[in-house]
Image 1 (tube, rainbow, N blue to C red):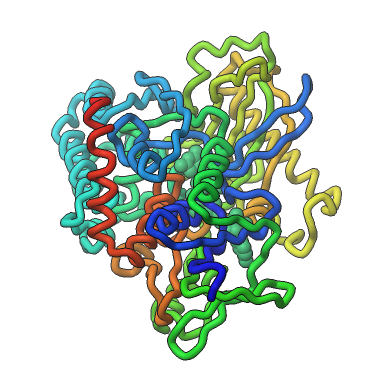
Image 2 (tube, rainbow, N blue to C red):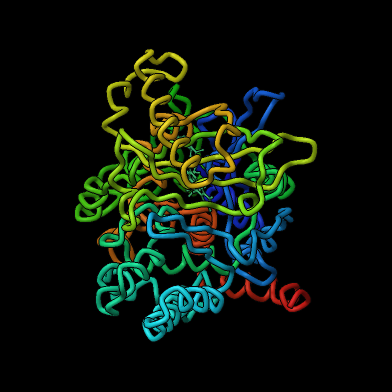
Length: 506
Ligand SMILES: Cc1cc2nc3c(=O)[nH]c(=O)nc-3n(C[C@H](O)[C@H](O)[C@H](O)COP(=O)(O)OP(=O)(O)OC[C@H]3O[C@@H](n4cnc5c(N)ncnc54)[C@H](O)[C@@H]3O)c2cc1C
C-alpha cells in the first residue's frame, strides 16, 4: 500500500492549501519542500538590526480580501486556520506619490471612485465605468465569488484586453491613467501587457480588504503546517524533487535530487511553472502550451531593502500604509529600472511588533541582466562587485524615500537587501522575477498554464498558474484540489461552510 496518496511539491501557500483541502477529503498528503523552512515567498528571515534581532517578511507585506465574509477570509476559515490580521488605514492604505502630486487610495471601490472624482472632476463618467468594470470582472471569477456558474476564467474580453486598451477606449486623462495604473507592482506587468482579468482581481482584492498579517507570513505558514499535520498530512523539508515518475499514462511518484524515489497516486507541482515543466515528461502538456511556457517572460526583477526606522522618526501619515514612490508620472517607469538617480520604491511601514523595532521594507525593480554575472555563484559567496551593486541600488531607493518623505531623512538603517538571485535561490524563481512569470496577455485565461496534464494524477498549481499574490496563489491551490475533487462541489462546499460565519460578522 502507498504510504501517501498525494505528493505536493512546494510548500508555498498554493501547495499547503491544496494539501489541506485534500487531507480534509480523506487523502494522505505529503508536502515536499526543497528549502529548510516552509512557506516559499511567505517565509521570513532574521537579521541583527541596530538594536537587536529583527524578523523581516519576504513576500507578504499586506493581503487583500480579509474583511469578514470576503474571499481570503473565507478560504482561511474553510481551511480551519485563524490568521491574526490588522486592517490598513481605511482613508489611505496605498499612498501614490508621483512627481505631479500625491493621491490617497482609500479602502472600498465606492470610496476609490469618490477620491478619483475629487482628483479628476471632469472624468466622473469614466471613473464610474472603470469601477463598474472592475466589479463586474471580479464577480465573473468563480473562485473569487464562490459561484460555480461564473465564467470569467474563459472570458476572452477579460483575458485578451489589456488595461491600456481599456483605458484608451475610455479616453482617460494621463493623471487618471496614472492613478489607475499606479498599483501595478501588485502584479508586476506594464499597462499594455496586463489583461483586465489580472488587474481587476488583484487591485480589487487590495482595494476591498487590505490587511497586515500580524506576525508576518510565518503566521500563515505555521498555522497551515499545523493544520496539515492535524489532518494527518506531513511536510518534509530539505527535500528537493528532481522529476516526476510516470508509467504509461499514469503518474507513479517522484524522484528526489539524490535519486531516492517515493510513490503516490497523485503528484501536484506547486512550484514556478518553468520548474514544473522541467520536472515533467516532455509530453505532459501539448506542444503549443509547452512552447508558450518556454517563451513566457519573467516579471521585472525584485530588489528589496529591509531595515529599521529610528524611534525618533515622525511616522504620522507614514505608518500603516504603503507608499508607491514613482519617479515618473507614468507608473510604467517601474518596468524600466535605471541604475542612476532616485529609484522607484514601494515602501511598506508595517505596524510595530510589541517591544520590537519599527521595521520597513522597500521593494524596487531591477533588471536580471544586472545580476546575471553572478548567476553561477552561491549566496554569501559573491564578489565585492555584487555587494557594491547592491549598495548602489539600495542607496538610490533610500534617496527616493528621503526625497518624497523628508521626515524619514537620516532615520532609516538598512539591515539587509535582496536581489533577483535571492528569490531564485530561496523560492526557485528563474531570473528572480517578482512574481515569477509575467501574468500577461497571451498567458492567461484560455492560454494559461493548465492544472491538469496528460498524465492521470499529475497536476500543476501555484501563483504562476493563475493570479499572483497570496490570495491568487491560495485560489490556485483550491483550484487544483477542485480539479481532483470536483470544482463545482468544492466551490459550493466552501461557500456553504463559511456562509454562517460570514453572516454573523456582517
Ligand atoms: C518581494 C515580494 C513581495 C511580495 N509581496 C506580496 C504582498 O505584499 N502581498 C501578497 O499577497 N503577495 C505578495 N507577494 C507574492 C506572494 O508572496 C506569492 O505570489 C505567493 O506567496 C506564491 O505562492 P506559491 O504557492 O505560488 O508558491 P511559492 O511561494 O513560490 O513557493 C514555491 C515553493 O516551491 C519550492 N520548490 C521549488 N522547486 C522545488 C523542488 N524542486 N522541490 C521541492 N520544492 C521546490 C520553493 O522552495 C518554494 O518554497 C510578494 C512576492 C515577492 C517576491
